[in-house]
Image (cartoon, rainbow, N blue to C red):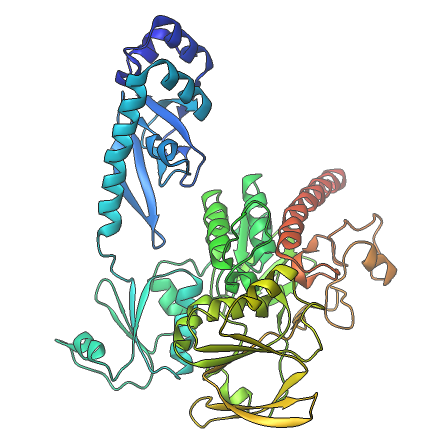
Length: 556
């Protein structure tokens, strides 16, 4: 409980009348923080804080690395910038030792400011000073964590670029025959460029590095740290990350295994306009980044560049590619789906060399001034077309059907109509692709007139639906004819459940193995529904673990 003397000892409030000091002491929150505990996280909602005792460290994530910006000592305040801008906190405030902090909600601050112009003026002056400091920090040139030298159509280089972009690691990409690349090699021997070369900030040179080796050198987690977990989640898309956040926040020892980068297919979306709580929309990688930070902060382990070779449904053990294995008390399948493949002659030969399934946001920069084509009529294709329209000379959306409205949201259709360099070509299909070292042209069949025409093409991006790649799962996990995992009542209807109790809503035919998100048989395929699935899966994991504990105690 705060006292009037403690509030009055804070310089900002020392000139307030006794009645106002008494009101603050009665209504302000009194936070007692342990070392390492946050008073407020980066992005937290606006409030005004005053340090009563201890030491508060100001931290901010830059390029995935935490950086200390300063400290707040007893008598000082923080929160003036969010109040001035009406925004979230630009950094996090963490106790470095046992500390005590006073917190005023925004409306409480405005009540005080209405009584004392002096308080308002001091807070405004401090906000201007601190914003100037933030501007000087952001003006400092940030060195990329990786400099990558590689040919544009080198698939290994493209894989590294995609990996770095998806994991939000800053990098510079240099083409080998440019002056910038010559400067890069200055003072060091230039190796034979049989593959991409990466230079890290510490000067280390990695020639043709494997993605996992580069991930390890960059400090990303690629191996489990624990001996056993309460829940192991396969897949780091929206469903998997939601499960990780809820699992870790509720005290479960949680690990996520992701073969590429957190975010899944949603992570490649240039804009998600209809996700609740983001009125201006949010990019898929930003949503994934926030969820990833949240899951890690709460204690979940996130492995990247690791694939699951198999599972043992009876013991809930995961077998990773290589020799690692993960022991867990329960499993959650959140592997999502993969883009459906096109059966066009020569198509596979040009994948990564002008032909792409899906599209990461980073790939748009490679289309500057080019004519690109997208195959598909769903929201993913529409979002990609909008994003590419700011880079490519022209964007053509090739649609097999007679109308976009059958499969694309109305808001996307309206936005596409407003783009002068975006064209929608209905009743059309790609019949052939051309190019030796990379894609140069495509043949398009116009089914309305049954005519084939050839077009120069700087990039072809395919969004034609997705399949559940679940062949690696054992027969104990029952699926439908298309590979989607059955859960709950669907398991019972298929005759795949032979246990005493009924399966939980998201439980598969293997007890203690759950499925959520797009990999689960469900008519709804949305980011929001995947997040809901992930959170619900943790609720059922709790029930399963509790019942297993009771059964174990009764047996013993």
